[in-house]
Image (tube, rainbow, N blue to C red; front, top):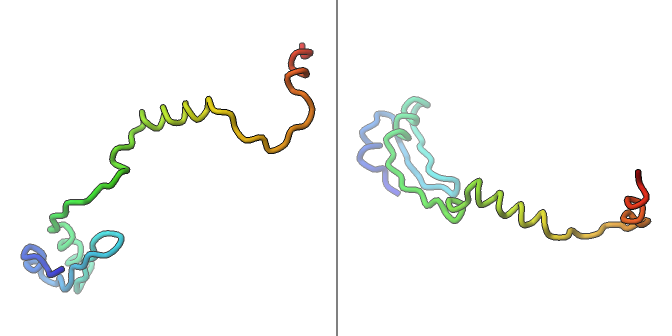
Length: 86
């Protein structure tokens, strides 16, 4: 990626690179890098996670809570014990 015009206009910005985690701005100082970053115009690919909402997670968790879990160990008869409990 070449340095876009807006970032070149920021004194001290040397390199703007796309990296796996996003975009890196290298400059002569923190302040120059910060200003170069602020001048970026990025359109992010938000991926599939953008469709997840609190409501959809609540519905998914409620459905999962209704499904039987895996038995790690069975000892005794809890149903019988509960029926005899006070």
